[in-house]
Amino acid sequence: MTDPHALPKYVQTAEMLTREIAAGRLIEGERLPPERKMAASLGLSVGTLRKALSDLEDRGLLDRVQGSGNYVKAGAEATGVYALFRLELVGGVGLPTAELISVDLVAKPEDAPEFGPAPKAHRIRRLRRLGGTPAALEEIWLDGDRARRLQAEALSESLYYFYRTSLGFWIGRAEDRVGIAPAPEWSAPPFGPGPGKPCGFVERRAFDQDGRAVEYSRTWYDSDVARYVARLK
Image (cartoon, rainbow, N blue to C red; front, side):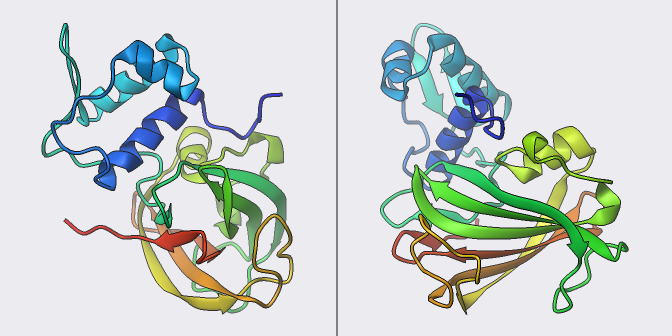
């Protein structure tokens, strides 16, 4: 059964490769495997893979040389749907996926920083996996003025992709504060740490393309599984 929240396969593949490039696991100038071999290894059709590679080429991450192959483009900056997603597997990178737990329109938390004018916000709780491994719990608060209501079946694995394609704005920058905090009371398997157990913790305030704060989020991550990684250039 198809997951209604999943990104299209070609987008998932493009994002997986983008994260591998950003992490330095695919180095500048490296030649990718032949397309048919690569598609088979990823369980994709050749057409889907080529659509993903075309997306990377359009973003300046790949040189596609007819008769020679596909090469990671030297000097390219690896940005994409998950450009602001900072969690990676301890032993690698891992494609992010998300499982929706709940979505509700409720009063904003009293201890949250300012993020938009509405007194209420859409609270989205999710389990985040990396490469299929449960890695984090997310609680995302989107200012209520940005949407009258959010339907669970319409939300994408990447909320930033959903904001851009469905709500007509995008996240231009974000501020993160990283520390340690107890897992929330709604923590449950398959996430490892139970309620109250210490976790890695990220608080984020995100701003739209015009510099307005529109979102506040809390992420609890299992430090045995994932790390927060920020690369500076």
